[in-house]
Image (tube, rainbow, N blue to C red; front, side):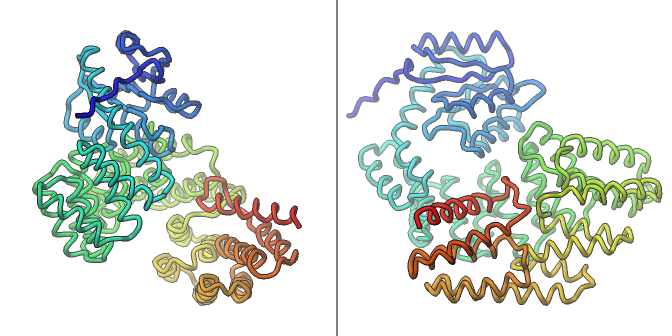
Length: 546
C-alpha cells in the first residue's frame, strides 16, 4: 500500500482572511506549528482579492463572515472567476455560522474544505493534509483542463485512476467534463449512467441531464432534473437546469416557480436572483420581479458581479406595480426608486453608457408618476450622456432604452440607437424580432437580413478554404454594416489566411491593417478585444517580416 507523503508546509505560502484579529492570530499560530513560514494575513475580502492579484497562494483560510464588505463566498467566487487561484490551491472556508442560507451559499461555490469554529490545530492539519494530497494528485489533470487540452486530460484521467484508485470518482468527474467538451456525448452518457446505476451520485445525475440537454432531448433532461430535485433538493444546479429547460419548452411560469424554490434555499446567488427576475418580467409578475431584483441588489452590494441591470429592472418593476395597482403605497415606492437610482448612479458613475441608461429609465419612471420636471431633467441628461458613450450598447439594453425613448416622444434618438444595435447584432434572430417590432425603419431589418446572408456565405467559404471568395463577401457585408466589429475581425482574419496560405502579397496585410483600424468603440472589457489584439499583433508582425 502506498504511503501518503508528508506535506511540507515550510514550502507552502498561506493567506489568512479573517476580520477578527484574535482568531487570525490563532490561525497563524496553528500554521506556524505545522512549519509554515510564508503567512500573509488580511482582514477584509477586498484586500484578499488584491493580494491574490499580486501573488498566488498554496493555502487560503477564509472566514465566511468578513464584516461589512465582501464575504468569504464572494471572495471565493471572484478568485475562481478571475483565475486568481493556482490549480492546486487549497481553499478552506471557516465559519462560526451554520444557517442553511450560509451553508448552501458556501457549498455552491465549492470550497475545498469547510471547517466550523471552534477547531484546533490537529483538526486543521488533518483536513489540510488530506486536501493537499488530493489536490496534488489531480493537479496535472486540472492543468490540462485549464489549457483546454481535453484529450490529453482524458488520457491522464485513466492513468491516474490506475495509479490512485482512491481518487477514481474525482477522475471520472474530470473525465466527464473532457468528454462533454469533446462532444463525445454517447461516451459521456455511458460514463455517468454507469455511475448512477451503481449509486445515485448528484454530480453524475447532473451529468446525465446535461448530456440529454446537449443532445436536444429536452423532455428526458427535464424528467431527470425533476427526479433529481425530489431526491436531492439541496443540489441547486438541478433547479437552474430545470428552469432553463422549462423556459425553452415554453413553460416560463413553471420555470419561475422552479427558481423560486431554489432562491429560498440560497438567496445569495446573484445570477439566480437575476434569472428569476427576468422570468418574472416575462410573466408580468411584477411583485416577484421586484423581490428578485431587490435581493440581487442587496446581495450584490459587495460583489464584482453586480451590474446596472438589477437596479434598472427594479425601477421598471416598481413602475409597473404603480401603474397596475391603485392600492400600493405609491409614496413609499417612489422613495425606494429614487434611492435605487442614487445607488446606481453612484456605483457606476464612471460609465457614460450606464449613466445614459439610468437617465432614460429615470425619465421613464417620471412619466409613470406624472412628474414632468423629472422627465425633462433626465431626458436632457440622457442626451448629454449619449454623446459621451465610447462603446456599443448591449443588444437587450438597446431594446429596453429604445422602447422607453419611443414612449417619451424621443423617436429620433430611439431609432439611432436601434440602427447601431441592429448593425452590431444582425446575426441574433431573437434580437432582430424585437427590433422589428419597435423600429419604423423597415429598411433597417431588410439590410440586417441581407448582411447576415453575406456574412454566413463568407464564413462558409472561409471554412472551406476559399479565402479569396470569403474576402469578397466580407467586403460586401461591410458596405451595408460598416461599423460591425465581427465582420471586420472576420475580414482581417481571412486576409491574413490568404497571405499565409496562397500568395504573400503585402496588399493583403495592408488591407488587414486597414480593416482593423476601422474598428472603433471596442472596449478592453469586450470579449472580442482579445481577438482584435491578436489579429493586430499578427498583422504587424507579418508586415515587419515582409
